Length: 255
Image 1 (cartoon, rainbow, N blue to C red):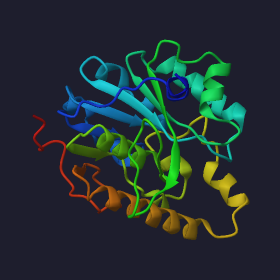
Image 2 (cartoon, helix red, strand yellow; image 1 turned 180 degrees about the vertical axis):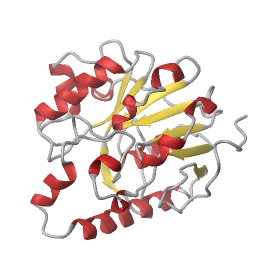
Image 3 (tube, helix red, strand yellow; image 1 turned 90 degrees about the horizontal axis):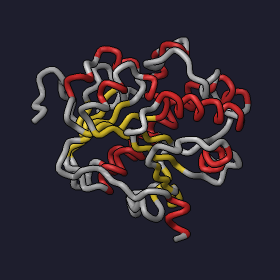
Image 4 (cartoon, one colour; image 1 turned 60 degrees about the horizontal axis):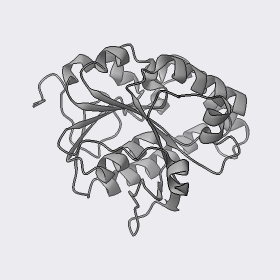
């Protein structure tokens, strides 16, 4: 009973269907998501603002996965973001939230503000270090501590025994843009106000060094996941992630 109270619902993906993971990279602006009707979709973090989300819910199993909350955002900023999500995300969308020992834990904010009363929610607990020797996909207990939401989404797909995973808008191309408003599908978000600049204020190394160091960690995690019993493909047209085969949404088989 205690585990059910902590982790919420125990839903998983349909292992017989393809899974499309939808991130906020700018390449998603050129993708026609209406082509992937009938498949299961995982939107990441703030991508509930995508203009096609509501219409896709009529034809798809739709999930929204958010990484654990973290600094530099304040509790009020996270609360504002979650309230916006509560208003905009249809109740048919299943929610997957990461927990952490950060003082502004997502579960406490949701319960304090009576949010998502009509949604199915499950939580996951990142705990183990991510390494080639040990990767935990057990969303019923503990999962490995990943560096980005897309890695958690792939891990959830593997946990659900999905055989084919497709990445859209997973670009990792921040370094190519001068302005943060150009880095993502959306120009701004309630939880990302000058996030890069605020992080840099307390960092003891350059933004460029941070980008390459963190990206190297993320790519390592992707490639460790790629050796599992799952086929991972990228559909992003301008991604810097070259760890997986790149396919074209317009021409690929969607059967």
